Image (cartoon, rainbow, N blue to C red; front, side, top):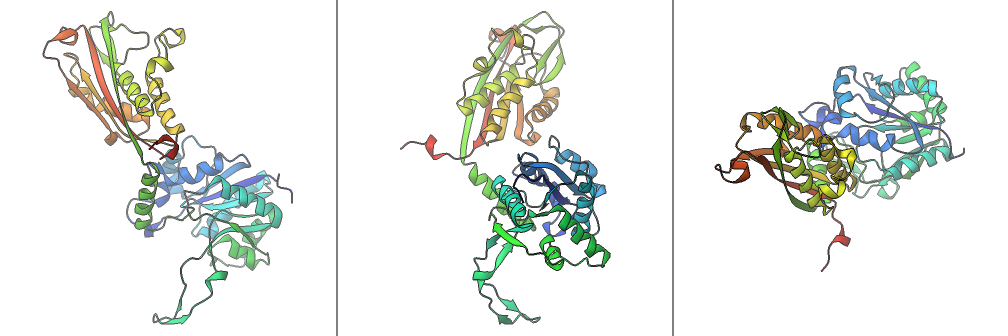
Length: 398
């Protein structure tokens, strides 16, 4: 078969994940600040050789699913069944109208599947018709009896750990699943086992040890620690901004419209809190300042809403594989009083930045009636941002 075959994906996400402990279905929990299912789906949704991603979910999880994968391209979810096997068949039936040539079947609880593994899965299925990713067994394996005694020690050289995505010619695996359901067979633990039962020869291709399945609470702890270790370049930036008062009836402060007796004299909306925060993030990135990215001389930023400046700065962090660890803004003014607005400002910054509100601080102080802020001629703000970037040896010198 040619490698250019149309490829679709069934993403199995209907399980309850009871062994993962409290906290709801594991595929909707966050790891590294991102839902597990988002990480798993994103790899397929953005792969250039995949034309359709078919999620299979529990109908009770519809709201969680929609929120968790917002922004990703996928087909309308199919309803999961009582077993993983039934859920896969549901996904395959939903894809049948698209007539794919190749289908990859992947567990949503494997959030670290790489583009390389996906490409190898497509190539292997195109060449063989049925293939699974595997990794070598590194530990010695023991076969034990019912009472726990060792009965055998198989040669680990021939043993492999099976992973997903498992890849097949679509028509062949759909027919195999239909036959199994018709014969009342619901005891298969993966799709390769169904293919073997149907008489297919299942090939293997190189998997990835990072493509592990999250099963227990310990798995989440371990992977959180691994992700944190990858973001070992911790940076802090600071920012400052000030705007004078002019005519107006409101102020934009940290993304919140605040009624006031005056407005800001500014090229954009004058949001000193967000401007200072943008400068802090850009400073942590060593990426210029807000004026170099959004020059006041450019007419298109006249009256612009400052939330787009903050989103841009956050995207600069994300583009480098980084994450926001903490954002802090201090407002310096006599009026308006910031205390009653603090939580609304924190919530708005968190919303714009895509971080949890626990990572956002908004504080305020006066200047004891001294200086331009004390005379209520304007407002100033300072900010700090702590970010984590992937550690890069090239950025360090001895």
